[in-house]
Length: 220
Image (cartoon, rainbow, N blue to C red; front, side, top):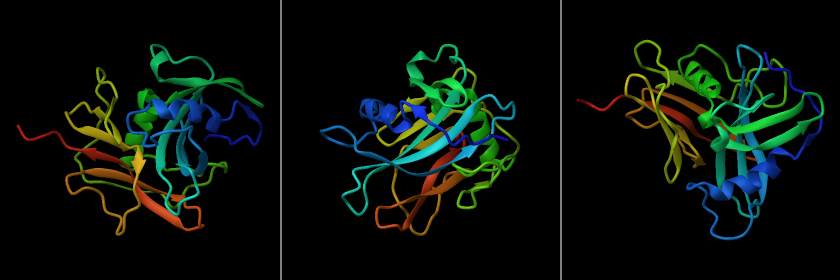
């Protein structure tokens, strides 16, 4: 169970993201620095209790009724993740835990393993800011046979609106980086598993969308 510490973090997560987001191919702002606000998300527990796992939703420029929203899976570690310098957002000084290394979680095997466990129903999403409190807005479903895992030799591939990774059985995990509210809330027809979540709009209403989908291997 992850313990949520209400303390200072320097630089803040949003400060790290402000310099990192414009480098992503799925980032949509044409010019100017991001104007980010934390709008939602959830956490997952690391069974070993060593790695912080967060699926954060940030909005960019809240002057519009529906500002662009981005899903940013993050992991926080007490030491560098080997061979993952390319995925490092930066380091932060945590008021309780000390120095923490913040990573794009799509490159962190702990996050990917726990995301699949969530899709398959083996773990539960937790509230972002409360200890030992399930996030009831997060829903998941799985129609596959048995469990799967990320392929050991795969690497994360960014598209114009998602990050994709291959599973051991030739399927694909797709993390939807650009979140678009949908009503009714339905996953793609070809998906065999999905996770949906919510975030706040500037007017106080809640938006919902698929955060991640699991797709089967293509027909032979």
